[in-house]
Image (cartoon, rainbow, N blue to C red; front, top):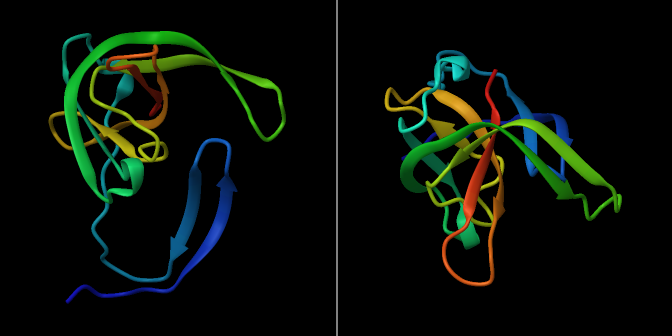
Length: 132
């Protein structure tokens, strides 16, 4: 069976669907960080998250564009948040994927999934916060 550990919440950002937790344990496996400055359009991108309540779902695609400017309404404040350096991917990012990692082909974190821009029908554009 899986081991369970106690954890403390260090910080949260409900608007970004991200939390930082601290686990007091030794030798736990963790994802390593890749260099998002080295990304190239066309490279493999892997998104992990829990879209629509389906835990630990994995989708793949490519890096579609770099350094995107995205404006997103913040429902908590009513303000618009501007993201200046987003990674665009065609890996499916749906509600519930936000806060999950965007990985490169080596399994390194290159970004944090945070948004999808979608028209009325069809797939949308997925975005991740730059990992650097």
